Image (cartoon, rainbow, N blue to C red; front, side):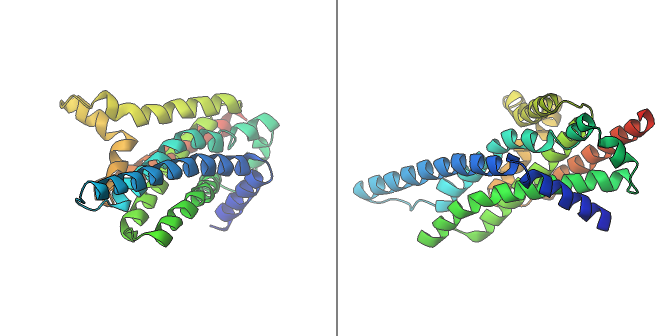
Length: 255
């Protein structure tokens, strides 16, 4: 466990030693802040219109602002994940430090999990940029806390899945651009799978739809924790880290 934490710490420091972490946090904060402004502006406008028209059912802050915002945040992750993971192993291979890493007194599992945790912590730091915006809604309104926490849990599980996939892809090349591009393509395909099967109810369509990361995030966005969704994300993380270990094993044989 100590070796995993040391690798995680080293990886996290490497992100903040370069402009990568700050640029990603600024990018996410700017885009999410723009989404926050748009959502709250429309919410206030529609609220005034309903009052002028004689009332009606009160609008929900959770449903009208927070849920769409966090769904928007998960979409932004498609662009963040490749930039986080593309350097995990590709940079090590390009700079020649992969040999030192492979001959160090740590196991492949410790290296893989440590790097994945470092990427997860960076993503968590980026996600904290959205907490500032959401906190303002709690300061000026009365949204429910539980659905927000569940939605954030869904974001972390979804990111963990995509980061593990990106880590595997990073082990297959020494070119960071290729690693980032392939990771983005795979993440996008996992995102669009439910679109391809939205008007089909066959067995194959059901299976393909189940593999979509969007399908399993929908319940989290609603504030509902379904066991099947948690199992899906954890299984995908485990599988991606497992094939990463097999890729690392092949690197040891070749080096």
